[in-house]
Image 1 (cartoon, rainbow, N blue to C red):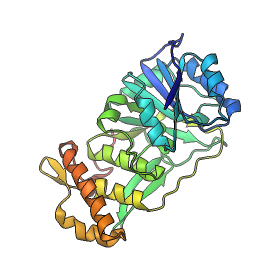
Image 2: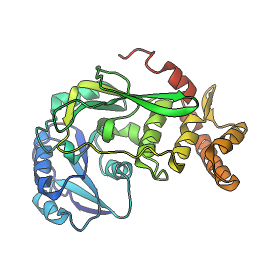
Image 3: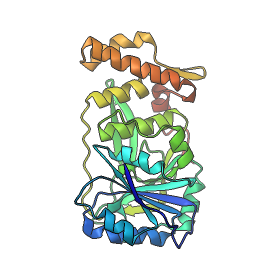
Length: 307
């Protein structure tokens, strides 16, 4: 990656919170986005993007020396970009969002940051409006039907309601928890399954992702689409999250689980065995971080009481 700017502190710091903004809009709105973010009073702002000669990043780094621009080389998902951004900050909390959520009417105050930090959890997610100011589904519930994993979505936004993951990664994150979780898995190529893998892991490791009715973001443009094809990325998610059993004080994938995985994977023997052994080694390495398994998580989802 290449880093530009970020050599000066913002002149107006109101909170010990960083903002990681992922570039998605066209260049004409970039200056407006960055001015909006600076006006909020973040301690640090990191703009992350895929290296593209059409972007006006060099000139912006001169116009906005308080902002650090991280330009990733090669193919990367948004989760990979968030990993890079998290590596550049040292505040206890970070607001993560795409730039098309902070073009118009964007506000994030010190009082809201305090309210979200008072949740005391890994990630607080927002109520999100589309470009016609209508609410979109942001509450996601995991389920398994006929041995197939799926996610249900709902428009309901109840304060401190559980959600499997934040829509479009937009949320207020505890940075230390993010780093303990290991960030997004760069070996999972599908952006959708990479995100599901990360946030399902968070729940399995005892973290929480909850909604806040006081936290609202609005899209400037069309909503992003996601590819949910159940390919090899899904298999990696399945192995790391749905297959482990929680036994006494740790998670593990028993060897006896391989035949059923092989049958459903549609992979050749060598490929299936390679995937299975890699996931088994990963779970063994992180076994004491597990606080539950997928079966128990799905059975108790929403039954613990949403505080």
